[in-house]
Amino acid sequence: MTLRKRTVRNAAVVGVSTALLGITAPVTASAGAGVPAGSLAWTECEGAADPRQQCATLQVPMDYADPGGPRIGIAVSRIRSGNPDARRGTLLLIPGGPGGSSLNDPSGKGQKLPRSVRDAYDLVGFAPRGVAPSSSVDCGLETADLATSRLRPWPAPDGSIDGNLDTARRVADACVRDGGALIRHISTANEARDIDRLRAALGERRLSVWGVSYGTYVGAVYAQLFPHRTDRVVLDSNDDPDPARVARAWLAGHEQGVEDTFPHFAAWASAPGNPDRVADRAADVRPLFLRLAARLDRAPIPWPGANPQELNGNVLRQTMLDSLYRPGSYPTLARLMRAALEGTVPPAPQGPPEAVLQNVTAVGVGALCNDVAWPTSPAVYRKDVAESRAKYPLTAGMPRNAMVCAAWPYPPREAPVRITGRGPSNVLLVQNERDVATPLAGALRMREALGRRAVMVTVDSTGHDAYLANGNACGDRTVSRFLATGDRPATDVYCRD
Image 1 (cartoon, helix red, strand yellow):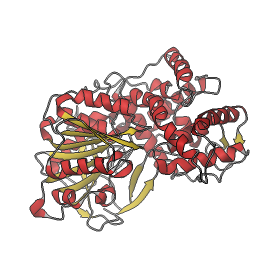
Image 2: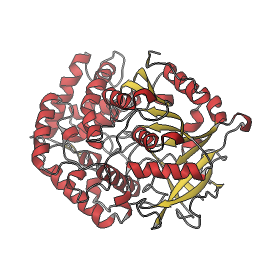
Image 3: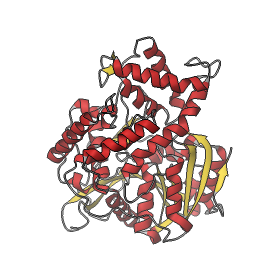
Image 4: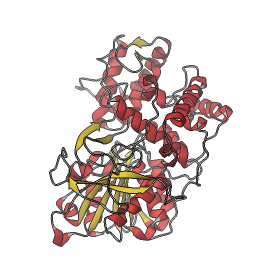
């Protein structure tokens, strides 16, 4: 399979952003072509960063309730262990999202793993169902509806959610019309079933996994549905597994995630000598941000070439949310604030290709709306948004507002998977203390749900993605030791450095 690598980075530019994704697109082969179900025909993976990376396609049922029905292709990649004598098995890299891909990760972030871990495992990545170059979905949305500040349900300046409900209905209608049969079969449980088909095709009795962000929920669901098919499980930057709300709980978590993380930004943005400094004192940064957002609500600044083509209060709020994912993105928010204070804007951001955004958005719609039923009554969202705006002004009610799932016409095909402590005690959670996307409060709920199966490493660090990314040396050592040797802390631990 010939591949062309396309990487989309979250908050690399202002105003247009998406989740941190590694998206690979096929050049000459179509997913699922000519590969018998349950087998993997490995070929050279042209265009990969590491020439050792191989590619294959696995065929799986589109609908597991109809295993003899239509099949779809799952694109898979692999780099074998460099030391066959030390090899333990396979480490599957489960991406975030929904809509992320780990297809490039064996030759990307996988190479950041210490040699002891790379020797112990074949590193395997994949593009989950719906994500190109696996059998993919697309809703054919209007370009304006692909703006993150619109897909995230930021209320109107006065708190009205009428525009959000209109967007939800418009996006749902487009996905029903153009998403095809596959979009109804995109769910976390089906991704977990695909993973177990992949495990079998790899010839592994048990599978080790490293799941990040949404991948922690996928990994937890896999460990719940197939507990005795798991070896060593690392869940990094953990989603709240609340079975009654699922993605609604993840969205709501941004309230606390911003509160946990914004003070760290404020300290940075007021530090003497910082060329992007916005205030003299950390205590002044929050009120400055709130005043600036309110000013932009009243008087947006034209922003030709951006999507939307103006800098309004919600674009600033979305940029804040994106920029808090990692301290390295703080300058993006600070520079936008400084420009807006002067009544100007930076150059229009260059977003990812529209085809990538269309695909990622459609996969997100499928997974979020098929996993659990969302309330359909506008009154529910109006009440929740009003309460959220009063208590958490930085996020202005967005985390409790109506997304597309409020207008999704299809009921879930199965109940959400309830995460429990039943199964082997082989899970290690790693979690930054300050994480805007998957806050510590939600991670503690994952820890509670897993019970005796898990131990948790809380890391004194700021940013989304802990292990080998925005964590610290103590957390990295603890996770690496577990993956390489199986040595796991006896109890939950706190890593200061």
